[in-house]
Length: 119
Image (cartoon, rainbow, N blue to C red):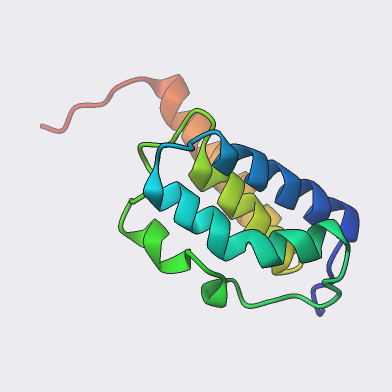
C-alpha cells in the first residue's frame, strides 16, 4: 500500500515545527534549520505537497544523527522535526503502529517490573 499525504496533518506538523524552531532565536543551529526548512514548511502550510517525500532528503536530516538538537528539548526540536518528517513521508503505516505498540508494551512491562540486577 502506497502512503498518502494527509494535508491537514502535514500542515499541523509544519506549523508546530515552525513554532518550536522559533522558540530558540539565540541558536544559530536552530535558526539555520528553520531557514532551510522554510520552503517546505510554506508548501505544507499551503497544502502544495501532494506526494510523500523521502525523509532522508529533507534539510537537517543528517544533523539529528549527531545529536545537534538534543539540548533544545522544551519544546523539543527532535519531536517536532520527527512528526513533520513522518507526515512528509505519508504518515505511519499500520506496520509502524504495530511496532510502536509492541515497543510501548515492552517499556510498560519493564517499568512495572522495576529495576533488575544481573548476577
